[in-house]
Length: 82
Picture (cartoon, rainbow, N blue to C red):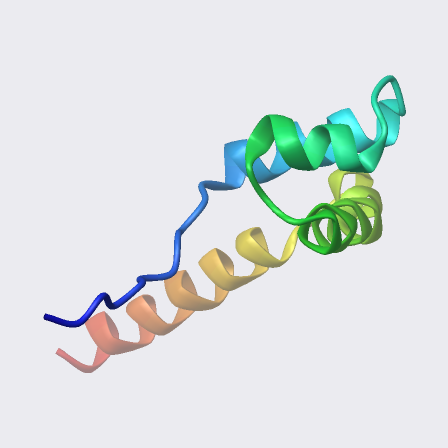
């Protein structure tokens, strides 16, 4: 019988929690690694990704709202053809 190890999948909330804990620097990265049972490198990656996306919180119009507007205009065009 083979022991096939599947990759674990983490929710966005979990990743954010770990990244915030890393930013707070209350515990060291190895301590966080042991606490959450993930590698130090993974914590570093999530922290970097979290910080690089933090400025998007303050953007006036997000990509999602632009995409919604695009879909809405496309929907209107299709209705006009009917």
